[in-house]
Image 1 (tube, each protein chain N blue to C red):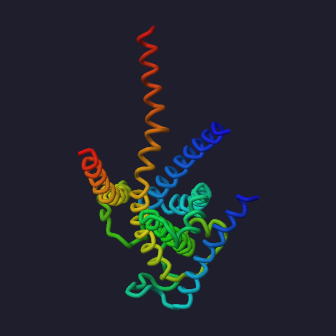
Image 2: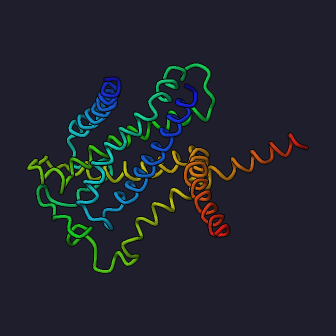
Image 3: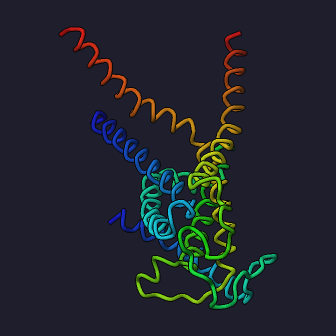
Length: 172
Length: 101
């Protein structure tokens, strides 16, 4: 039973790493519409919404646990992390909405014309810049997890693969 | 079922945040945030083509190449991670050294 649990936890961590890396790189590409083009920027950001929901679902237990204990005994880093995550969520939602409101690819392609208001453009720029800062802080606070997970699930298996090949070559 | 309920909660909270923002921007009734100047006439916004609004930037303005924005974003995140992780690691190492010593 515990072996099963450990295997499922390993799989969950692997999925988490893959989802997080996808969101991170998608965000980096989407953050620069001058490079990627407006259509890629908008469609990628819209798709990132689904990835973001998966990211939140994978961290659901942590969110519920800290939400319950937030007023009680929680260490400072976890508290900061929790507040930062909420800021990231709120900022991301506002960024997404303002992006939809100034959409030039996604909504027009669906035949939807939204009223123009230039406040949305300023809001979109502001929230995107803030999102970059918050994402940097979020990454920094989870750096230990990122390094450990990379070591365990990427570098170690890769190292094992390379060394086992070398050993086979020597044996041959 | 549990997952669907969770997705519903996430989407509902997101919709709430978006709704409040939409109401706030609509209620402000302005054509821009405080300090922001409208750049184009109502309905006269030029189309965003090839990564920029037509006529917005002089030719050669983006001389840094198409990778510049991407590198800048990675740079910002790298600086933040370094600023937070490095002192933390130094503190941890000192603590360990103090315990060992």
